[in-house]
Length: 36
Image (cartoon, rainbow, N blue to C red):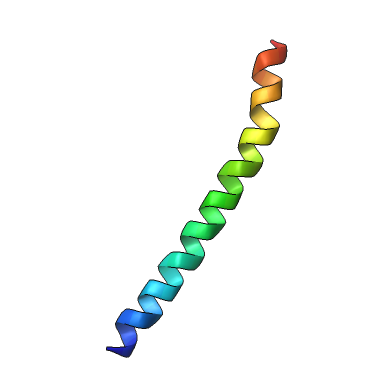
């Protein structure tokens, strides 16, 4: 039971990190692409 909760917490943390990284890359990449 506890392992499931820990796994879900880890998954949520990873998803949040990935989401934040994608947002940051979007902010950095798209202006560069439009400048080409």
